[in-house]
Length: 119
Image (cartoon, rainbow, N blue to C red; front, side):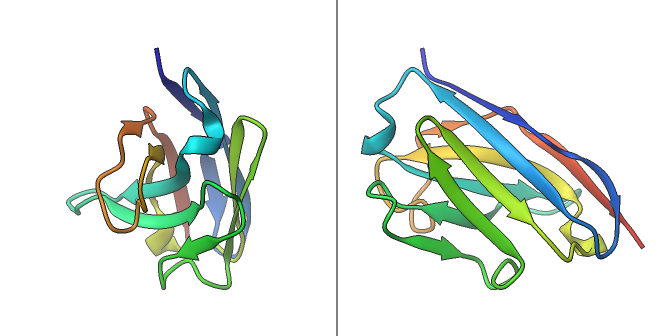
């Protein structure tokens, strides 16, 4: 049974930082692109960042470039978020994909963790 379990969400003031974690089990980690999506109230779920299967490449949405950093170590995926803005407020989802998750719907999702940024 595949499980992706996020943690690390919370409330922070604008300009602050948060680090999201995702623990992965039930799949062969190195066979999957791993990444993060987010969904704000009233909006569609959107791609945030991904780390490739080989861990050699990372990809970011324009909104995340320069502020967010994704990393993957063993069976965990992390998203370091700095210089947070109120528009970053959303539920953040960990995802696993057999292909590029910025180009296709991921195969597996976590339950999500809430990030709230106040001005």
